[in-house]
Length: 300
Image (cartoon, rainbow, N blue to C red; front, side, top):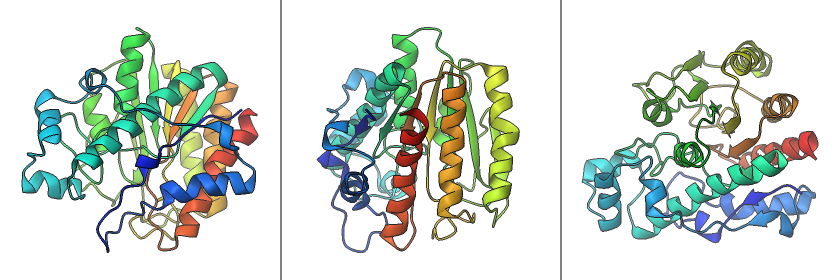
């Protein structure tokens, strides 16, 4: 049985005209059930993550500002969302969804969060539609719960995982690997343990070759006990915020390859969905749904 984190709070009502496709969080579970990839019983609802767990990653000052809604106008502008208490609560549920997926993955190989992949959030601030860094939070909880665990974070969103890279820059047991568009946001990139910056227009074949040239050797050398995978679909050629040119099939082949490596090396893997900003919501949903299909095909 595939385990999928989803909560009704994932869909947050943004003001009219906002470009972030929040509706995908309601539509994707329905598409997965309609296509037969998942059943209602496969979904679980995460509660809000306790403050103590968030503070393993984020600073007390930043969390205080979020709780009391005292972020400056510049800090809010950098995040990109109008700030409300409900948005903060949403982030806590998403972060716990990723942590719960990690626990399910330890038992059954893989689990996926309908949301997450908020990799632009730093310890002390949010950026780029990201308030809490769900994968960093889950990784730090895992390090506390299972001391000595070696964690590989594979970030295949089209944008570099700058917040994640910074959070773990001095952590030898966490390896951050980001494959992203060289000219995409953020303008100022952090230094991951391994960054692969791809030129504009990179298509399916060149993209998959890049993965095959870096991920197997990373697994061989780092020997991770666990993988967090950020499966952004903003790598599609149709994406309005990305600059790469993958097809839907190429994106699915990417996911299947990551899942194959994880299963082949017997490494549990938890997946966060990441970005997707194609003008047609159907393109976003199809590409995200393919991630779940690939996971089911490889593991079940």
